Image 1 (cartoon, rainbow, N blue to C red):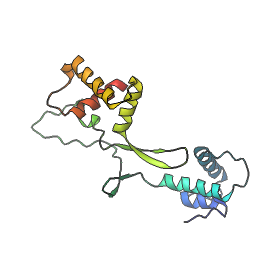
Image 2: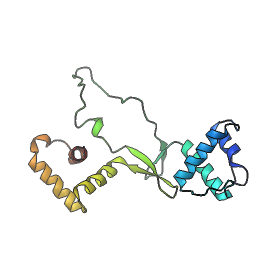
Image 3: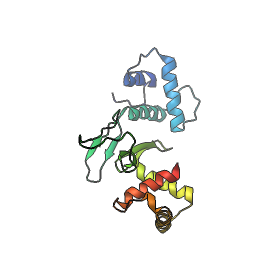
Image 4: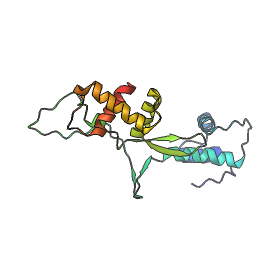
Length: 180
């Protein structure tokens, strides 16, 4: 349904969300939630059409799944799995504890969506978010500062770092351990 904002909002929301038009309390709660999220402070009983349209669009956006947009222009929908999938060979001993270099520390494919105060939605890579959090926690402002911090951490505790593991994986482990 395409809603123009000129008619009543509650029947359109009820149809969009699959609710009964008679469930006024539930619809009012949904409108209040959207108003709070969008920063609409109006207490008028009848909202202007642009505010009604913004509320409708906010609920419509929440129904859509998060999409991961790659640089090559291909779009794919990310679905969360309820349990992690592990590829275990029979001749190897399966460990019950996750290894530091396992799937637990692999953030390169993890994205999450955030909604900005102006109502726009964006996705952020978890790896970049963790790096920024580490920078703020330790007061690092430049890439040179980060590199020096990483080198110092590897020198101070060389036993934890595997010389055969990629540096990025070791850095990710440092980031997680510094934030915990």
